[in-house]
Image (tube, rainbow, N blue to C red; front, side):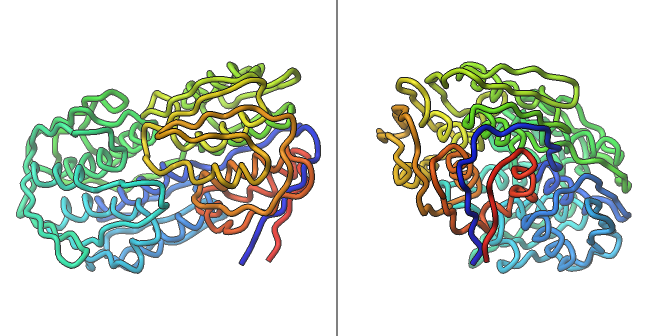
Length: 417
């Protein structure tokens, strides 16, 4: 099994291009099922999760394949299989996003309940609530969701909590429903906005994406389109955090800084100097890292997907920081691994009290989920000696060529089989 070896090698310096957004790409790929046509996506990251989605779409009967280093073609005109099996859906949670498009276009779907990182309970009840409101009949059968509807009908749906995938799934289904659908308490994440942009180009009639109220007016059919996936805001934040942890100077390109505002605010509070351009961010860090308080929250709040990486930075801050996790209840599994590296962290409920230390020490550590693995690499870059991160298949789910990109910034990092 692969592992990544990181040796602290001083400040990171240089410029790096971020890959396309994993979270955006997966939803966009699912949306291609809505049209009996070919859609093309460019700037798609080559990741385990993307390959898993291609495998699922192929199993449904679509032609779904790589046609370039970062280009995917999905021709959904031949879709005929309406069951998404457990052995494919279990690989990642975003697979459940095929339910809405299949239900809306074909009136029937059978999709396994999803898997993914073990970072807490992420039920699909909000997805199902939305489909039921649209007129679908639902049945749970041995771990599968069976949904049927002669024709979905618009409805007013108020989500009980913020749900990015739930908002996306119901929004896609509503595009082909009869009449108007209003989604209240909708997720505001950039990935929801980008999906809405692609749906509009496919011929959907919707408005309000980016706010907590989205209005969709159903249409008879949608068409295939060509779309470029936006830069990955979490990868960009991770690389900037690595620059700060090592007291370096890093520029990330290919991402909209507007997607990073809450992350940049906390990095500035930690003492970083940050400059933005329309397509990138430059971070410089010379003085000591400052302690901060941070609470994760849905967009536009501080992203839970950046919590582990920021905590790695704060282990080296002057003073005491408090990191409170409000999105997932089990997202502190990286804490014992950081403690193995000499971090001073005390857990109290959903908060971590982090007292900065002068130096982290390299150690064997284990990645427990996607973002935890990124946090451990950030810590290893700033530690003395070798940090050996095992279970790196987690990081391959969400970061493309992470070692190569970090080596371009001067990191001493390698992958071992």
